[in-house]
Image (spheres, rainbow, N blue to C red):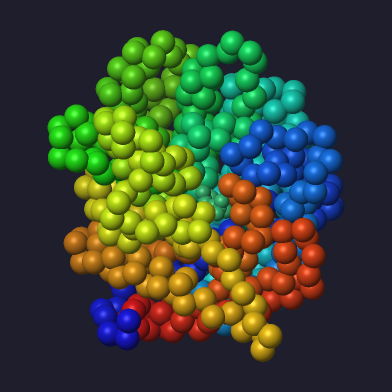
Length: 468
Ligand code: BG6
């Protein structure tokens, strides 16, 4: 700490990232329909509870729907250049299949974008972030059904047209590869007994690729100069040993993720996936013209989240010790967060270089951060030095990657204000620079309090990274 480093590139987009369902609350206000998040009281890794009898934190979030002006003023005080947010599909099309949008929902985001504009904060908008309309799941089977592509395209065209003078940066799907790990959240997928689940997941992914390509084409048409990216949950994998089999296993594991950006950035299915489909009896139904569409609708930049790295091993002994959100092998060289996510700043430099080498397109780190328990002391402060250390060490590696030649648009850390966690649907796990006085039972004043990291991040932005 305290060593002065090089400044980041001119115009670098510093900011924070959120998702509508994790902070807006007001889940039924102004004509909003129910989304998949509204019936996920235990988070994205658990099956939905459609009865919704369990208390669901997402329903009230941190009431950003009513408090956004106050919150944006705090982001502006930190000097944010960009704010990544998502549009709740169900505010615009409550059931997903309407022809006419809900004006009140559209007006909410109009006001939000105007508020950002007041402070010259660039909005970066995710069209779909873990919250498709529940009615599309019930009536159509979610992304298994090709019809959903049409509904998504209509939604995308509606928001492009409405916000064309207000939003330049877009992303089509949040963490599109999550359809493999949390199929209900990622694709509105529920399975029948005996169904070939893998097949359904990859078919759903194909529909999302087509929807994304259509959105890229529409966005470029409607908003000349717009930048439309993909967004993957990056999951860089290291071999446990230098054994060639371990190296191969790591490469194959990475390809489960890179497949998604390969299709969206290069515009075709890679050979290794065709083989994977053959070996696993997976058959993707494609329509005529799909291959061309994928080519025509490639993304302008690669957005990605980065929280942790992974390890692959072919030795069953090593596989027994699990690390990370998605299980896997524990890396003996890394410490973990309280939620078991392995902390690896160098991994971020590696991911940045790998993605740059592979695609030669601009990159955008649209999520990174440490989920931790914070303590509000009696004098009203939160001393979150652990968060500062995490972010500092990752940003140092980001700077190195830029020196390596990586073209990077910006950095929006996850949850600049505390919000409901996605994997575990709780408020105990916090990421913010701004503390929200609300707990996992929904109790508290909902007041906003600046943490120590608030002042730290403000200085980072003010000096364009020189203070790091
Ligand atoms: C990403 C998601 O996977 O990770 C976010 O895009 C999520 O929606 C973030 O909140 C952090 O995960 P969690 O489970 O700690 O909230």
